[in-house]
Length: 252
Image (cartoon, rainbow, N blue to C red; front, top):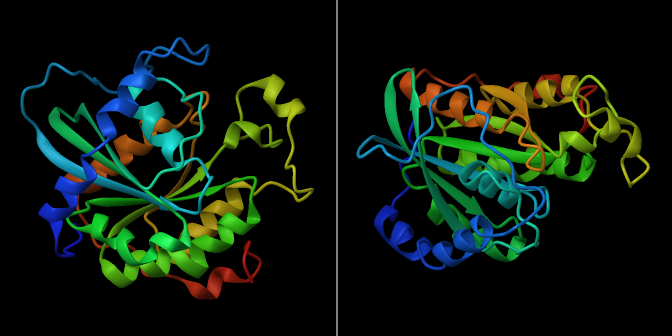
């Protein structure tokens, strides 16, 4: 269900500044990470009109929220880290025969923006709450901060829990690149967060689904946004949070 926080128009007008320069720089980059789109649905920029869907991305700093947004919207991985305050990205898609205008709002995870971040939440159809599968701390933030913040402003919000950077996990079942599987492990010395733990965490916060992605390889990105739009096309009440399932989960 769409979030009904006030100040929508002020928010959209303010957040539109500065996005164009950053996107153009990304799209024109000769980055070796640039790749061709590989989507399961027909995505095109020739659509003239479509139903508007707003997706807001939240989570701790440096979990890969901005890379997720840019990689999906431009089909290229950004080569520079640019700390986000608030940015938005527009793209178009056809899902189940329905043309869609997708507005993606990227937010800052820093505590200094806590008082203004919720201005983005107005009119949001789906929230993507993100954590890195390499960071237990960012997963703890899902319960201790992000789910509470989103539910506090938008009690009936659609939420998909997103595990980012899954290409860097040593779990071979979650990664398709065999080189990545053997080359990288959690730099903190802790075990990466598994799919099972992510699914359990989604149940704890009452998210509709847990999904994983890699902004670097593009794995899982199209599926996340396709699923987000399907939640809008086929609305239903989100599941209730299940805090009793926190036992044995990442956060205890």
